[in-house]
Length: 524
Image (cartoon, rainbow, N blue to C red; front, side, top):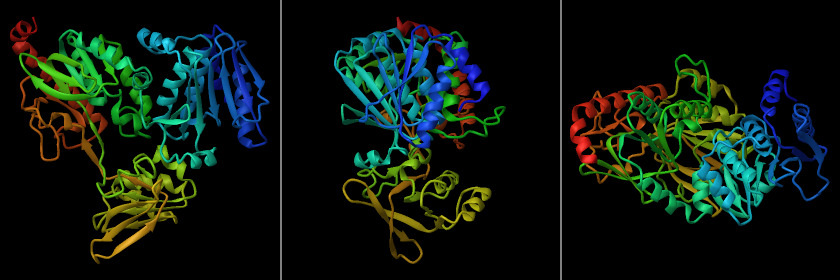
């Protein structure tokens, strides 16, 4: 099942196990069960602390593997074969069950252990989803610390009947005690805030008590990470506040234009960025969304949690998100057939007809990827020509189950009240209305800057919501700088965002040098 190089790496990792770990497998006669059995036996061969037993319970999903601590009676279940992006989730589950310290703060660990009610989490994923492991690993971490918390990762492509019964059309989809808990990316902080009602208030108070930052970076993507590193290296008291570290890059499947790195994946790059930032004395405050920027003697960033952070200078690096079609039915069926990540949600539409909205690189790449999974892909492009690179267009045209329609204006998403059933579009030349029968719609029509919280501030925005900056990253407000996809920087690329983050940070440093006496007096 595993090659020798990987076994050698795992053997080194598993040498850190201090407690016994039971891998309890439930199998049927399928090939997937054989794969899972081989995987469990490979793990057991690498450490004397790991044993494999069979679960005879007929009510258990098959194939499945339970990572169990006989000492603490913790339960972390994997329904399916946790390979692909979920292989790391399995390895971490074994390590944490076996006594290896979890990567969480002592406050978070204490909070998890203090939870005193039974929490049974089920997480529907696809093995090609890059967002899913973050959610699975956060919940598994909780289960490894508290026996009242149980988690089950469920491969939606393998358990299609269950997915259909629960109408799961977007992953990760998390159920808590049988009820929908969340859909999409959530952090450990998000989860704890929802299950521990007193958590948000306690956290807000801690944030209110923070000292004034020299530089406060709002946003944790490539631009924000770069800005934080540059500020910290200047010896400045630096903070990063972000909804989640990594931003949109965490959802990126493949990165092949990051100079000096031939190829990488979004989550891997995000982990490297976070590790680099944390090498310095940077205060990273994740799970927080900015709500307002204001100025008095200092610059204030109010958060949706109710807390307010104060700084002498601020770097706005809030990035962008996928643009919506803004047609009837889109909001209603978001997560129920309307999707924005073909890599994450594509496997849920196996053998079904879908549409991709947008004929740029993202749209045509999505169509090519989906064509290997779904029955048929219809690409709808508003313009009379495709904006994608010629090599992608040629590839798409070579696939028999991709149809490309130009001059198509999507006018309505159709559904039956539970899920998408199709869409209507108008031919912009003939003005005729057409209807497609579909199971899913993947929207790939560009980005919108995350700058709504600045609407009532004095930071100047363009008509498209982008933050206007000069060649040093400075905005219209003294001491406030900006970088990355949220700005007027014309090219939205990871490497350019990193460069603009460095520029903004150096601009802020220059500002602080020139205003250090004034700012020190105001902070006193």
